[in-house]
Amino acid sequence: MSWEEATLVRKEMKEVGIKKGTGYSWINVKNAVHVFQAKDASHERNSEIQRMLAKLRKDVKEAGYNPDTNFALFDLEEEEKISEVWYHSEKIALAFGLIAIPPGVPIRITKNLRICGDCHSAIKFISGIVGREIIVRDNNRFHRFKDGLCSCRDYW
Image 1 (tube, rainbow, N blue to C red):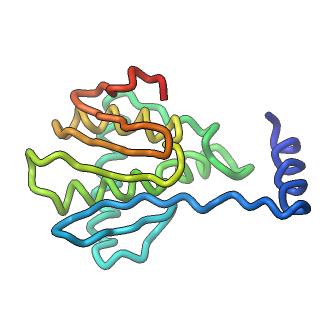
Image 2 (image 1 turned 90 degrees about the vertical axis):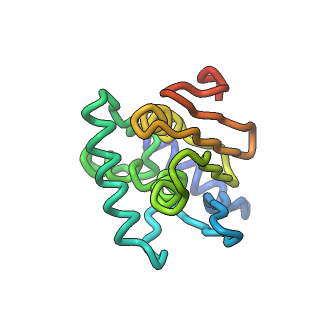
Image 3 (image 1 turned 120 degrees about the vertical axis):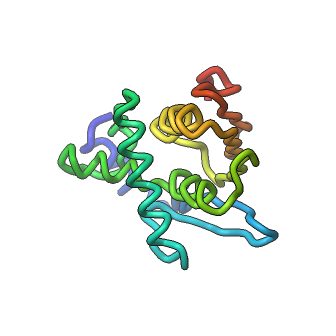
């Protein structure tokens, strides 16, 4: 689908009153629920989250990950698209989980929408790099990431 077609569809949806729900990811740490949106910088531990995201971004790039900018929501320059997909809510929740949950304990994230293909790919890489089990429950299925693989066998 081209950007022009996407813009037309969004316009038509707006005209008939259809709204796309905001994407959220949340994670439970020490009996407290932490909720994140894309590009969210409001968390009290945001500086630590941003450092972890930067480290993960560097590590996955070195491991061969290439961002899929088809999942960027806006008609942006390529570098902006790469940044856009990197700050999806599930990646932010995962970065928080990595700093807040002790090593060896699985990280469990819930997503109110379907996980995007780029996040799915990135989390596979991250699970192998950090040696952690990462479970993402989206509105379609459970994804259990471990050792660079996903239980859905990429049928997400």
